[in-house]
Length: 355
Image (spheres, rainbow, N blue to C red):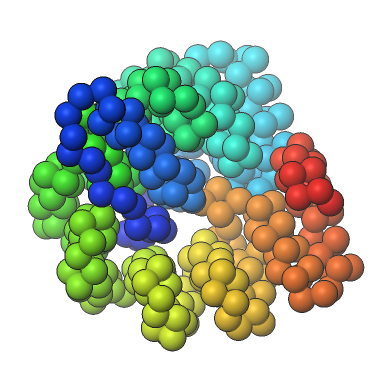
């Protein structure tokens, strides 16, 4: 089974965790954790298991490919038929969880991933996706429920790593959690440092990225930049360049952010989801809209689309970019394309935008 390159979007800088004792500190910690979850990897695109289809049964493979191509309605239909014939198919439950996850359908994602884990508790990937689903739910929960869910996020990420110490996606997500969360909900800087040390021999780029994220959380921007640059030097992947670009953008260094984005684009021979990250950075910075549009179109035309950057969401992203440039006809065409792939999500998104 092949391994996805060490890359992942980073999250914006997070506040330091309070050190006070008592109930007030607990509530403050949980609320801050929820804010961090909202800004972190759980709110962005997680790793996609790009090798999954290589060993999936034929029915799962068809559903998997539909999911990677953004045809979530088709994927859901295939998976429901399979589950009607075999309700204990853990892989189908995980894929249906991912179909719901891409559409921000919290309860459905949690339910399906719980079924995946209950039917195959020794599968690292099932625990990883259940942790992600709990993370999405935690962002929308109240403080008490958020506290319970946060512990479940941590427990499933940790279990995913325990079951497969080489699951780089699980290592990455567990590291993000350790940086974001205080000790009271299973995280903490000491855990993040220990995890980075474990990762360094086999996954040095991901380890440097985690150390950079930790340095950011501690407001040590010099160390953070150094670690992000080490990740680029070790691997030079599009994702490593995107991490560095986000760091520069978050710290008001727009020219360096633009240079890092261009390096990411140049390194992305596969034309994968890093192009979507690049377009997002350019759009947020109001820089080079032509390049942003080209990134999105190149991704949509590539053979490397995945649920790491759902195709229907990229069409909607492109529609917003085109509308901002005054090309309303082209923007509407992109919305209609998204609607054919994910009709319910697109309707909800259009309603939220009032369009």
